[in-house]
Length: 94
Image 1 (cartoon, rainbow, N blue to C red):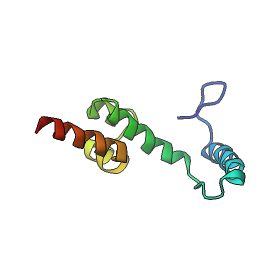
Image 2: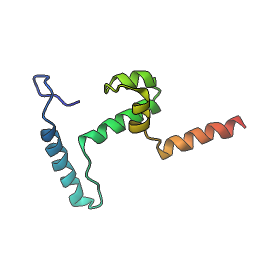
Image 3: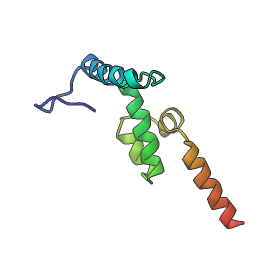
């Protein structure tokens, strides 16, 4: 997901430290802001990809998951906005 200027994968701890430094700066003004890991970005990407219409089978291939069920069960989350939008579709249909 993150590469060096030579297009090689970077070390996970470097990304973790960079995100930690950014979050610590944010927490100075917003103490309740939660720490997160680079792995959280995989969940966000998967959720947003499905919300924007990416085919699930395509999404499965991007992070290299062996099964579609793993992608959908572990990485795709339903947001409050999505729940509202989907319920509005049902309301319009009735």
